[in-house]
Amino acid sequence: MKKIRYAFVVASLYWSVAQPASTAFVNVNVIPMTSEIVIESQTVIVSNGTIDSIGDVADTAVPGDAIIVDGTDRYLMPGLAEMHGHVPGRSSGNLDRVLTLYVANGVTTVRGMLGQPSHLLLRQDIQENNILGPRLVTSGPSFNGRSVTSPEQAARMVAEQHAAGYDFLKIHPGLTLVEFNAIAAKANELGIRFAGHVPEDVGVQRALDAGIATIDHLDGYMQALLPPHEDPSGGLSGFFGVFIADQTDLTKIPAMARATAAAGVWNVPTESLFEHVTLQAPSPDEMARRPEMKYMPAETVAQWRGGKRNILDDDNYVATTAERAVAIRHRLIAELVRAGAGLLLGSDSPQIFNVPGFALHRELEYLVNAGLTPYEALRSGTVNAAKFLETENRFGTIQRGLAADFILLDANPLEDIANSTRIFGVMVRGRWLPRAELDGMLQRLER
Image 1: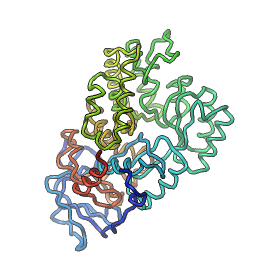
Image 2 (image 1 turned 45 degrees about the horizontal axis):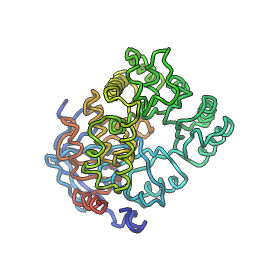
Image 3 (image 1 turned 30 degrees about the vertical axis):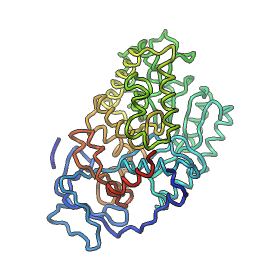
Image 4 (image 1 turned 120 degrees about the horizontal axis):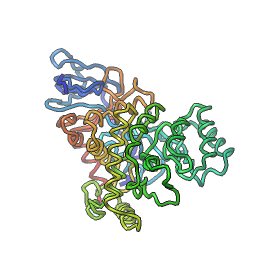
């Protein structure tokens, strides 16, 4: 590497403090994410939510009215994107909790993977800085075996969601091949992306051929690794194929990775979700005692404990097979990256033991465990997210003219990915939130 409580009134969601004209991060080490470099001793000036200038600390004048943030021995990097998150509805009692947890962990963009009509207004409110939260990219309501009744009705749903203004379509299990094909054809005709799960009747190769934008959870890959004579049907494959990992042919992984790259399809592994649910250790009780669980309602954590216990108690569960499934997924993640396939950071929070924001930092560690470098892991939640969303000129790197979405860290995450959790402060579209303010936000969520 080169050195160069649902708040008690909805109004609490709204920003109440006028922001200064400018903020200056002085003498900071910049990790621009344009390449694997650290640019030392810089001053970064933000005005009106945008990066106004970046320059050497000795040569860059600081506006007289600017808030000064001391960056000495600290590292400034772009905010993270949660590319598989579940955002509550605009009137939900959990919305404030989820948005707060994301922001407090430096998550400045979320791709919401289970949309509803209220998200269209929520997206606007966040973008216009009426609500403090990460920018929202939203799917429409799910296409699944219950919401879709025929190919013709599926195509009408596509047209309706496109007209409503959703950013993309969410694919869930249960679709037949003909229904999936109808969705893909209409979506491609209208120019709206579709993404998410790979229905069993479809399979990974057909999803790639149809132009699915992202495959989330590595869904379908375990089944695609089965030898031709193996039949994955009958509901015995378990949580994303955890029960069939001992039947897979690993020699098929490189070809699958190349096919994914050739199709231009991105993956959001949500490895944290898979490992949290399927591995015996840590136990459900141990995971329920993790520090971040205090920010979730007790009943939610109890449900999560039960969800993991249900997997471990299944008659088809074998601990060594689950461990093999994790190893296969690690190899697949690494092979996808080496083949040039796009990888995006996502945790599927809030799901089983994945607390919003906190889970994304655990996801970074799991990606590194899978063989990625810290830089490659961080790219999946910064540069890659902006590229996938076709917004490279808006955020994802630290460059003049881009959105001021930052995390200021006390240590270099390129040296140790765990340093991504050492957050000194967060900037969300130009609003600076120092550690004390972040702690206050978190404290009101504690049980």
